[in-house]
Image (tube, rainbow, N blue to C red; front, side, top):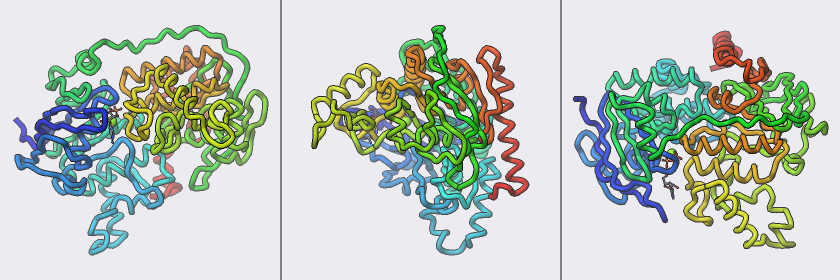
Length: 515
Ligand SMILES: Nc1ncnc2c1ncn2[C@@H]1O[C@H](COP(=O)(O)OP(=O)(O)OP(=O)(O)O)[C@@H](O)[C@H]1O
Ligand SMILES: [Mg+2]
């Protein structure tokens, strides 16, 4: 039997109106990869935040190597070798990667020189296969890159227990495979890895033990031989979930969105869309596969009017919408579900009612000459929340306290309810449990039957193959493949995606991209 590093005993954590953790026990052993499972809102992140010193438990004990600890801050937990990488990153956006990694480290001020520091971080990054550009500012990074920074930051602090909250939600299958290899390496060296994830195939592949939570309570611990998807779903949901949808044959109409040789620059001022051309028709889902960082985010942003088009045209129903303002583009019927829900899609400090009218509060329906009409705003929120089954405890709570799945449902509810002509959606199921993923996928398929043109940007090939009518691949700011889904081949699409990765590595090797 391996040595117990962490022993959580009877942890209770309450938030107004909800018991997020209800007397939860958990042991974490040295050398294991321990998966924590549960539906959206079941209390996984809360429990791990208690362990990481972010929340003080209302009841219960935390023992580290048999000694009770009372963490007053994450710093205390880090000093005990416990490091957590959160679902919503905690980096300082205007700072560089190197600054973020060393932030708060005394070494930064005494002793180590800048270049030595960078060398030692680079070494860590290389050892675990985590490539990062130390000089880039964090706001310039993609979500995937930000996550890599977080991991290296924790490794740099000498974490012995590394908690990762849905780390692969932002990675491609290949990158996830690499990450797991590295996590296994860490476990073999005596560390413990706690992995919160919704991807059951990952759990089957890498977990040594599994803890399942449901509505804040511990409902089961599975040992190596007992880990299988069916059992995990049964424990989590209490019912079986079939991820097979009937794709209603719907008629595809005329071209709604056309990108014609579009060029745009990324945040560093470098070309990121290079003569990109594509079309999406009414009632059609174009699934765009690609490794994040190949221009997908920027593509969505130019369509939504959030980024300049340098040259080329974006046509919506034959009308040129390039470089119109985001408001004008919304008014023309374009809906956008961004990758960063709390950063861009929703305003964290506002409540559900306010977030649900963010895009149409100017309508006479919701606002009088001076003020909003509170009744109408509330009715709108109540209707959407019940129709889209968003789980909110109160309409007046800031939405930042909602779980990932509920945030995404709220955002989709708002966007779909505007009956858009075009929906641009990026990584829609990222971070969602199977039930919520099923719900979101069904919403997109429903929207398609209503003749909306849908541009679905995703790294999850299963998702793309399940939903899309056409499959495209984006690589280095260009469309490198475009097939009807029946003719698309999983291997080939995967290869087209990975091709760009190899190319990127070459760029780093020959110095085109600086490290
Ligand atoms: N800071 C907070 N204030 C109020 N309520 C909160 C807060 N953080 C979490 N909650 C609530 O506690 C419950 C558990 O949330 P938690 O984020 O731990 O779930 P989770 O299992 O991580 O879900 P997901 O899979 O969606 O990330 C939810 O009902 C959530 O709304
Ligand atoms: Mg969570």
